[in-house]
Length: 230
Image (cartoon, rainbow, N blue to C red; front, side, top):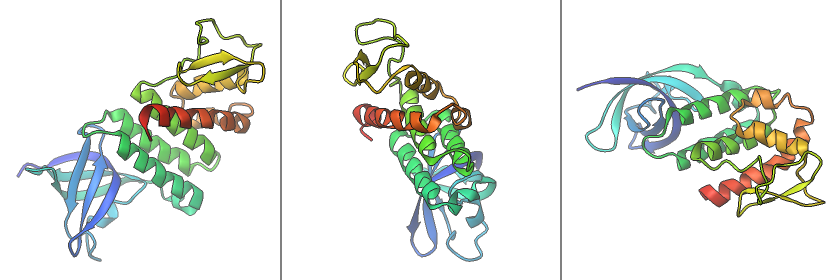
């Protein structure tokens, strides 16, 4: 039967039978795959080392006639093993994998594969805070789904003023002037960088990043729940 090769990231692993596993993977070119890894739970399995979590792998598989194909071989391309040395980074890694699995259909664009790979890179970098990775990932999911908030004008269409404080109106997804609003020039600039697709390493260099992350987090989480129900 025809064998195909691609890169992949493991999203889910479910034990099946005595020694098999059903894998859900995301790839850059053929979307999401469901594959059975036969005998992978046996000690001498040659496949097991190539399907680690927090990794990118090169896989060879046979497409199934139904929804599940067969994994033939797997070779690690890059394993982000340092993530598991920190419990907080490990737990966030699992959370991001689950989120991506929920929001992607059978044929997601390559951008989603790249997003998860970049998230692993950021989690492995101890100079990048866990909070930054979390808020960045939420912002990218919103951006890729087309839910970028209006960060240029107010609810009335007026240009944002650097000397004015604002609150965020979730119904119109835009800012509204408010004397005690939590968003000023610095907070809005940071949100613009966040939703522009910049890498976490770039955002980590912003002055007062820690404080700005705390302001951006509730906004991105609420928008994600409001628009994406996750």
